[in-house]
Length: 629
Image (tube, rainbow, N blue to C red; front, side, top):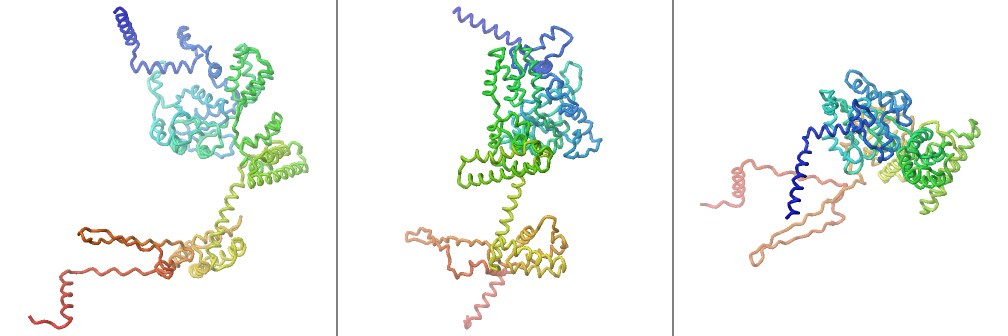
């Protein structure tokens, strides 16, 4: 009994405490906003020391990436120059509302403009490898300009329906954060920013149609939109970049990262040398976030980092990269990259994508200036010849791999298609990287081959040549025989052109194929000299003179199954099914596609029932002799 009484008293005390701690919704909103402000400004001093102690969180047990997270744009590594992306983003955001107020007439800048301020665009695209400060830069720039951020990242569903229903309203709303900001503002502000992180990850069923809807929202947006991605050359980003201020973030230099990391190690009491830091930064691929994680983990075991052990740890924790073909090509020909790469590392570049990688090398090796030539034209030609011969051998190896399924020869192809051309042409690129033109040319070749095959099939009853003969001997003459009367005689030449097409059993689509097969670069289109009225008359005349072509595809309707009801001896009706044969005799003209049967005339409608009966009775009286009544 005593134990039960004590439990009741404890429950009453807990209920009183819980009741006293309940807060109104307004207090909850105020508390969340104040905590948000406290976390965003941990080092900002207030008027009271007591408030300062309460607002400054204890970061002693936090991760290094959170403890040393930049609190201003001046602390971002590699973004201190006047032409840095952070400065460009700051100027773009500060002038956004003035540029898009409708008072200025903005023109789209040239894609190759270097001094573009981005005033024309309503959105900005921040692209670059992970861990270099894209998200941090966007947050700090908005914070310094007094802009509120609404963020959507890969953990949120960003489908077309969600963006249309929810985000479209957000682009026209006002921020309520001003109501609770220190009590200094009495009205809400319209200045807030939509932040779309990892837009290159908007794929799959959950985010289906998200990129297209995002583009439509950007066109009609009344607030700035900041998009971020890792892969600038992703196929989904190609359409988005046309509507965004393109800001490409590059990895900071090793010296810049090393200086900042030395400062952090000094504050943490970690003994480390410059060479050890270089190994850690290189193994992390200059990812600042991962460098901080490695330093935090290595120093937890020993405050003084030794060279041998740290090298082993850095190698074990080396970042595995998936490079795109553009990044691979830069590394294949870059002399600076070759200094820190072994033969195995250079061979691994080929295996990033061995299907399209050799095509990139073949299409761009002439745009490289080899350092070994030292500007000598003869030596440059020797380097080009050696690289070309190596790629020829690599193409032969690839043919053997795919024809004989000999995939064990891939390392040999890597040597001849990637490593040796990069060695011969080692230097730097002199122009932008071109996408392999072979893919487009091969697609066009397949298309023209298909068109030539269709023409040969249609003309088979009139000619004896094969597909190659059609292209070399017939196409040019057919084009002239059809287009010349239309261009010179006008409407009088329509019948002559139609007769040529009928003589070779050509369709209207075949004429387009002939014009495409017989066209050459920088050659005038012969149909361009034909008047539009003549073209229309030619099409009408061809469609009017309908001729059943021998290769027309027709389908014979199956005879339906007839069912007759037959009375049985028991008086019940039994269904008798008569199945007729689907195949008919070869001499049946009803299934011949070259013969068209005329439709039977519809019977005349009866004008009057009484009149028809009278006619029938008169007809009966006219037969035989009449009987007397």
